[in-house]
Image 1: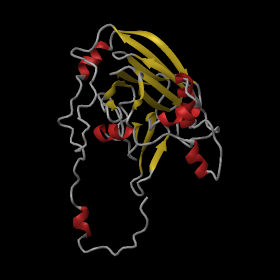
Image 2 (image 1 turned 180 degrees about the vertical axis):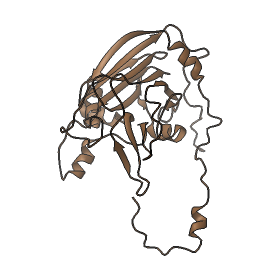
Image 3 (image 1 turned 180 degrees about the horizontal axis):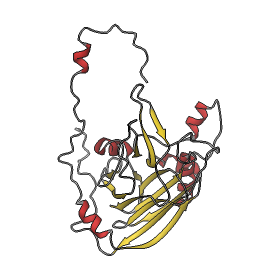
Image 4 (image 1 turned 60 degrees about the vertical axis):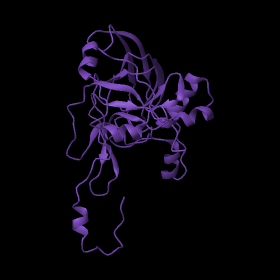
Length: 286
């Protein structure tokens, strides 16, 4: 949030501000999936697994490469915080910041989620979104953001003069990963990372540039669907903020479960092969 300026405005201020922006990462050369091929095989899917994230709690699941999974709003308006890992190596996990840099602040059909360095490769592709009609609203809000970090007990402690709240998404995900991996809470916590905020409606205020949230447009039956590019371990927290229309990190708002369904397609997308790890030689100029 920018403070009131203390510096005298220079004579060429308007000219400096008028310089047009340049996209940081031009993606014309970025390999893109044939989303039509992905969508063709999703018409013939067999349900092979279902898990549920209870309100103010989290759940984990495994998805083999070449399978689909859906995050479903089952009972009422509810947002979820998603972490994804390489099922065989927890150190390779979802890289929210780089995914944002390559796709934009909010994700949709055809966008790919990338993993952390040094592997940095696609780990999942969004293949369907029942909220794709929402777009950007008059406030600049949109759904499925990769700009928020996840609600956490540390920020809550800072902003509540020492409050202790244990069902923030960060803590929910930590407990779920510890259970799934056999790690202690202390061992599991460093693997929890910035999330894809599924169904959450967010943006930045135009006057102060502050991150905002508003009531999610999600309704029972809506879902966000992914294709697993590699073997995945997923973790999803049903946020304690419910639809995040008022507050989060709280027991005061209505919260609902989220359901995850895993599907096996009858065939794989034409031409699909699991993505290789990033080709950079890692010499770093030495």
